[in-house]
Length: 114
Image 1 (cartoon, rainbow, N blue to C red):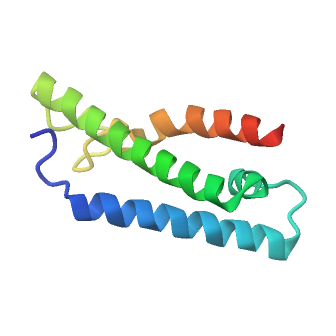
Image 2: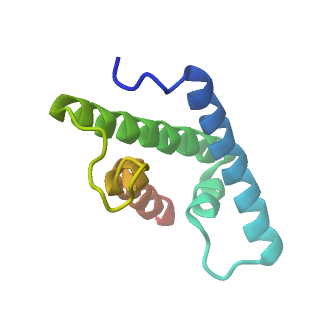
């Protein structure tokens, strides 16, 4: 067990939330006639299915980042990665989902720009 307080319901709810956010963000960009398109708008300009698949992929990668960080902490036998944010698991718990997703989001943005 990597992280006993995580649930499949949380994963599915998070993925659904990311898809809803991506669609809403794209619609908001369109309504506001955004001068600089967001990642979601760039992906939607390719195809709405691409947007949904990319959002699910990025959401799944954020879960993997969270679980990987939990595994590292368990392997090291520590509860918090630092004392900077007591009771919050440390700084890594605040950014663990971003570590795998930000480079992938940049890659997707670059691909969607072409």
